[in-house]
Picture 1: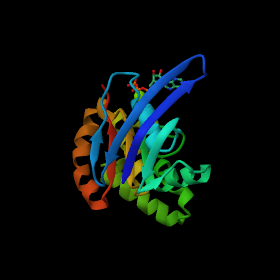
Picture 2: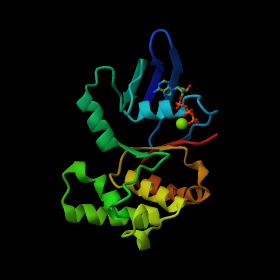
Picture 3: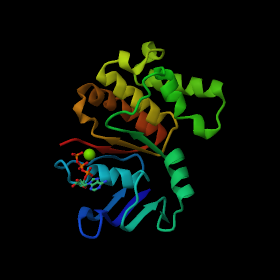
Length: 198
Ligand SMILES: Nc1ncnc2c1ncn2[C@@H]1O[C@H](COP(=O)(O)OP(=O)(O)OP(=O)(O)O)[C@@H](O)[C@H]1O
Ligand SMILES: [Mg+2]
């Protein structure tokens, strides 16, 4: 469902170019769980950002469900990001003054879903990651592993086709939790692109 064809990414100006990706070709099937490992600075985050539509490739092509993205406009990338991809960022990007529940609900605001339905789905996603008892807490009242699980719930609540996670291996708890995602993965036929830390 996703294919990278000779993707390159260059950062910077003509005089000082960084070749972050030098021709990456890869295929991901549906419901596949993929880890990308490599030394710091080798281009893992760059690759994930491109796969997730957060950043643009310099050359090559990213094929999404058989469709080239060469002529994608901003709004095509927007809709791809909003409806097809769930992100777990390394820093989790949780909003500190809002409850755990609100943080997850926020991921559903763009979809035009009623408040009641949003709450219901967010609670379900939080239960699925074992945070039922913590939904009315603020992120700073949680442990690192619990915060990470909030970020996972937020990535899953939209039921995206693709889940991208940057460097989640730092947290062993999460790893355990992830094994229970085997079920999740099969149920929802998700493709999980998993970016492991070095
Ligand atoms: N916005 C940017 N402008 C210029 N160079 C960049 C930019 N972002 C990343 N780079 C460079 O591109 C290369 C790849 O960076 P990237 O963040 O993808 O690495 P990484 O594999 O995720 O590393 P880490 O394991 O440390 O997170 C590095 O050499 C980095 O310095
Ligand atoms: Mg990185």
